[in-house]
Length: 552
Image (spheres, rainbow, N blue to C red):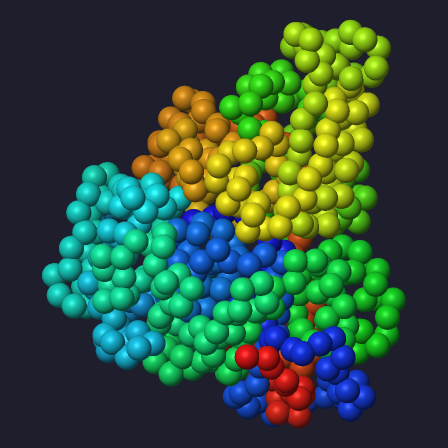
């Protein structure tokens, strides 16, 4: 299940931070430490991170956004999870069995599971979570995956069984993404308004200690964690909307890790020996991409000629080179380059302003008054691009604005704080165009994003895309168990999407991360699951820990 929108911080599976009193906490003694020497492993300490956007709540099936899932993934478990090689393994379950007709999955939970409040975690909680995600009043953007279950049952406290009407190819993947919630605390509650969303009780390595709106979230180790104990004691996430401000905190030794933009990764840190001494850099091609999406319910974006014209008018390589310093890939498919799901026969729309002008003319746009801006039916072609406060997206929008002006389209740009961006614009559909990103799951199913049924407020098809052929392909792909036939379905889906241009692919980007060298236990080179796959085993040697001055 993909999170709604991608933040740079989601390149780390574990989200942490410490709230400090200021930017001058680092001492001369800290600056003199040699972080390249060996140091003994010891549990304890605090890991520091920052996020650009604050979660709207910590029930991720309702929030449907990356800020929420980044925090809640430390608090809640799923039935299954992926290991470092992206193979499924048990999280809450010790084993599972699939029936011979591929329609029934029986999960056997591990014995003696506990919630953080020491109450038993049983199959009743899994059943309650399935009921919650499929309940219409909850309007979960993930519901479509679980509505295909025709029957869910709990033969005993450790057994959870689901039966599908038809064999469902992404079934196991979907259960790896659904965080299990406690029935004893949420039964009968409105998941949209419950105080639990800001004061959750989970089962994972950490529990929420405190949350100060606009400032921080503090987590500490959960004594009843179903998977044992993590090495690090505390994780506190500071809310710092500006990436440059985050970087100042990183340099001042007030945070331990952050997602970097290409300039900081490629130029600033390599040019500063004092930063190289204490920061390690990591680069991974993620399963994500940045795009510009149209509101297809607004004219003239309902005209495919207009969408294709804008696709030809934008120089994607200019964005990759100028904004991402070459640390990106020009793509033509909504799948990670190099995987079997990415159609190798597809090529991106080339930069071709002449073709863009011809398509706009064909769609009825002409410059009637000679001011350089096209009109149709007496109305100038002018629209607004909105994005969240993300420097790379804002810079990309500026380059798009310049290129579209060259073909006669007037564009304004507005950058909005994350929570307002989601609640006021994305969930309401009150926009012309957006520059955003998708972070995708491992299964190729993208029903939640592209199927025409997924357009209710809070669901992922917020651009209003409708195409009967795409609907049919997505429905077929979910039920096809043969990997080769399934690949053909998604190749055809990607081709249809490219022809239709409901969005414009701007770049498949790299996850660029800086982590302080005091943090040990990180796999390098990273396995397929990424550097954060074993974050519960990361540790900070006693001699490398800062004098932590936290505000409460």
